[in-house]
Length: 575
Image (cartoon, rainbow, N blue to C red):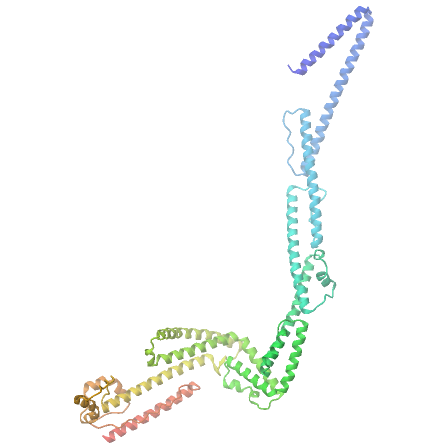
């Protein structure tokens, strides 16, 4: 049995006991039955009124609890929708009081969440407004009246983080560009003369609006200042180049140059003014020393001609170079020609340097070829012989590659410029082929000279006998041995023996190849031939062109053949 039931039973017992006690009192007093009924009715009404009042109060409590439950349910439904949460699930078999308590507790929690979200939204919107004002951007779009969801708040926070990062990036960019602008203004001696320039240079950095328009205007201002600075630097560089050129032409002493060295760097207005003044002074001095200046500029022009591999005709095309009357007009013509050739060289510098590389390799190859043909090189014990042979073999592979590469580049150049690329007055590949042909002809000439020398030696040996090639032993001090004296006298008697009998077959076969080189000089019977005439090999070792070299070689060959025919005829007559 419940305690409440026990208490109810005790209450009924107390009431019955009280009513019995009242009846006893009334009996002792002698109250009549009618009055007893009245008094009992009063007691009943009183008790009933108290109980009814108590029941009414409890019923009222129940109604209040039910109304609270209904209200909490309604508010919870609204909050779940606003907070975008799942509906609240009530526990089954809960009493009215417990249900009301649970709903009321959940409602308080959700109201707190709503307040916190609204407060965070307000804080985020305030930060967003500050950043947007600084960056001149539109505030983040979100409904201020509704309760934001957790996802919306998270997106808002990420947006603010991106805005903060953009602010820092623009601020760093602003500070960097501002420093460059200040530096350019200082170098140009420029004073801020617009409101924007003053805002950039003079105002506080935190007060500058970091909008995209302002950043773009800032970069444009920097670009304008850098363009002016680049122009000023170019002007100063040009002035310095002219000063150095005039110093060299006028042979200005080093002391005077060092005194002006302060202005040879920088591009400020003061420096530019000093450079212009120096140029004017040197130009005036140049007019006073016209001949010296023209000689100097001619030397410079000749140097550029060499770099551009100008031929004789190309050099002679500039007639003023050979005029003697030194005037200002002549100087201007030379200045213009130097500028033209210099620009031509700078434009095609890589191609000229490649040709120069081929020239250097070619000269080295010729030098190594010359050393390879020198018999004395075998006496070298320093290891250079092997090194030179390796270098010569490497050049024999490198030169054709360079030539092929230059062929492609020069042909492309000629297609682009619609003119021939000349080296020493010839198209490059013709020049290369001529150099190789001259080299082959020179080697052929040397070969013929060696064969001629060998033929002469064979003729002398056949006429006078062979000469011992081993060195004779040194004589010992004292009396000579008779046998040795006779052996030393034998070469003097050799010619008579040669005249008395023909050369042996074995000796002729051994020298068959060399005898074939005598070209018509025949020994017949026992006749002693006369000495062959001196052959004409006066070909220039290096001819100006291949055609001249070929003509000289042809003349020499004809002269050599005529000499051989005469010698042969003379020999037959003597026989």
